[in-house]
Amino acid sequence: MPLRRHVESRPGADLPQDGDSRTRRPHFPVTPMTTQPSTSSLHTSTITSLPLLARGKVRDNYAVGDDRILMVASDRLSAFDVIMGEPIPGKGELLTQMALFWFDKLGHICPNHLTGAAPESVVTPAEVPQVTGRSMLVKRLKPVLIEAVVRGYLAGSGWQEYQASQSVCGVKLPAGLTNAAKLPEPIYTPAAKAEMGDHDENITYERTVEMVGEKLAAQIRDTAIRIYKEAAAIALTKGMIIADTKFEFGLTEDGTLVLMDEVLTPDSSRYWPVEGYEDALKAGANPPSYDKQFVRDWLEQAQVDGKPWGKTAPAPRLPQDVITKTAAKYREALQRLTA
Ligand SMILES: Nc1ncnc2c1ncn2[C@@H]1O[C@H](COP(=O)(O)OP(=O)(O)O)[C@@H](O)[C@H]1O
Ligand SMILES: [Mg+2]
Image 1 (spheres, rainbow, N blue to C red):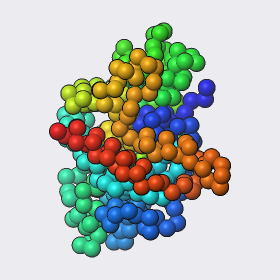
Image 2: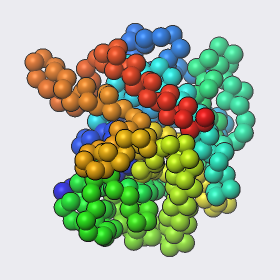
Image 3: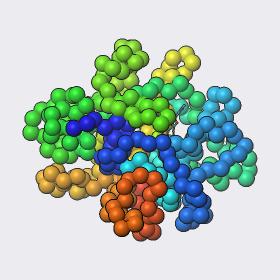
């Protein structure tokens, strides 16, 4: 069984989200604005007062001077690594609020990339509606090209791999575990963050030592596991299991390790509501999750020109009820967390 990388190896994406696809460069539908179901949703930001650094699958990043980045979370959704033409209303804002919630809770473990300054302060008045609620103004860091994946449960590609080898990303596990089983201890299964246009791949801890040195590799591993454990415990008090997650880190000029990117959102993590978990576990099924399940299920049966969609861009047009249900899932996750 080939190991999945990045979007796959990254738990939030690998199973619940992006299935068996391989990372491709984002494809932007040519006329995204015309497909917006509501005026408040944002498929692609158009901030012209700042230089565009990059459009990711979900975030549009703009340079603010040479030491900060304005990260605008759009309402784009990618599934099987293909960006849908239709935005999911509210998604960008919900992801941002969730990440902010977690940064606030986890600051005692590791510094994060937030500057504390308002995103509205670096754009023109006309651009304010595009950034409000959905943006972070962050310190521009030197990215560490390791995706720090932590898994507390056996799910998705991890479960596939376990069945074949009783291990996940080379980490040996006890015999007899079933789909969605809780692991005796969370495991760290890093992936190499690929350069633009390339695929991330699962790597061993030893490889991360070669990449960044013993001290930093251990610091990333230990910090990631600690954040996962604390976050999972908090989420559990809100009735949600964080099955696995992916963190990204960066370095300041003086070499301080800083937590960056988004943290613990349904795009980077696999969230399961506790109700439904036991039944799924007993049945050996995938627990229901707070993410793009409706979209993936619909895409699996979608037909294009009389044939199953080939999971390459462009994606078929999403039906309104799939959009509505997906938006509701993201909303529910944030509401539960912050209740
Ligand atoms: N503080 C930061 N400094 C520099 N780069 C960052 C910072 N926070 C996040 N990034 C990078 O910005 C990008 C975020 O956009 P995203 O849509 O998530 O892209 P991707 O499609 O690569 O996941 C990622 O490449 C991430 O590594
Ligand atoms: Mg990302």
